[in-house]
Length: 169
Image (cartoon, rainbow, N blue to C red; front, side):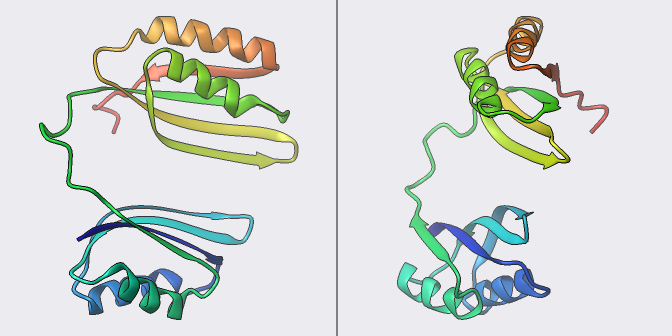
């Protein structure tokens, strides 16, 4: 079975080792994950393949992470595989205010982009963010960048979009 597992906990040394040891003991394969530490809280989302029931998986994980474990069973992968995409990075920065992420992500969605990664950080009143976006066809990056610059002007922040350059990665 494939599951999406979300683990939320107060951060501590050894937490990732504890979670992955549980998965290994169950014969589980960690297929993808994204982890961050937010204001002293550990947040990790994993896609795992394991021949255990969700109840067994949850019971074992809650033993090492008693603050929070959520498990969702995944349906079979969609037929046809991944569609070739165009990748764009949106960056933003400026003084913090309500609605920055809502406005930026709405502009991205209206342009047909699918957000696959979002990272934000607030430091000393300055809001920073990076948004990874996939498009199912070549993106109009110039048009998206122009729209995001407008959004940024309205919000009083700087917002820019650029295509991912594979040579830089």
